[in-house]
Image (cartoon, rainbow, N blue to C red; front, top):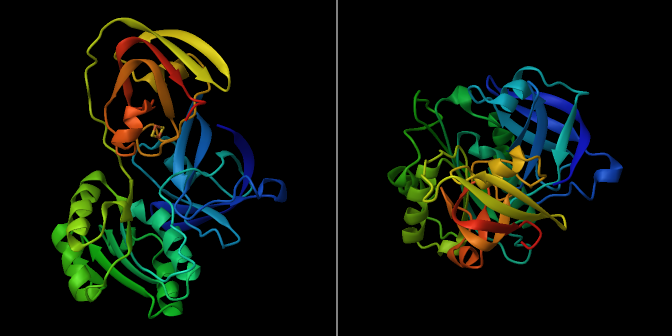
Length: 347
Ligand code: FES
């Protein structure tokens, strides 16, 4: 993964716990940093001597002049705390080029009814998608269901108001708050019932063409089924997980195992504990494997298993047929058959 040092233009406070970080993409990098709505960037940062990488979604649309990342402060989050409390205009960040499969489907030739559902900071890629959808076809209608704990936690509140005024007929916005009630929306978390209630009563039962969901795993899992039953084909329910929870899995083999890995045309061979995640073992051996979230949600770390076998702790990204082809998320993979041979170039 290639990183470039880019300057921060501006750090704008969005809520008490979230900022919008505007990245200065100079002329020479314009092409490398062109992106699709819904994609993210990975930022590398030295924190107390440790190199950390975190991925953040772009909240601006490709048609906007600025590239802005939405960063919510997570308790004890190494980069998000720094970004919220210390980062300022003029600072330099190491930033990867845009990535991610959760992207807006171009529909320039036919108008669509597009449902967007976001919980908390899951609004970040959804903001980009909403803006792109409104300009991609001048008859698109966007239905946005947006959940937060309280009004104070709502990122992009002002910008959403402006969009509602600019597109009164084509942006239907419905809010819900799960901790502190507000007359601006419903009270409660986004779940099956609230989703169906909103579609029926606030959005007037639209015939949907596609849905974009971003939020915690439980919400996504529940809504995928609800929206499928509502009439959307599975491949039209696109989603991105935020706040992945790590699950534990014990390896079925023990001791040290051999891992051969091909990265950028060079094969490296290491010995690593079988119960360690493959990506962690590679990084500990200073191998430049691609990664960003390390939580099984971004897909940067995909590689192909050529020999041996792995099992993933969790996987919400790869399809069964991709797994059958040997693809795996190295940040989630543990060795179950050694020696293991993996390839980052053939993906
Ligand atoms: S690093 Fe993001 S899925 Fe593995």
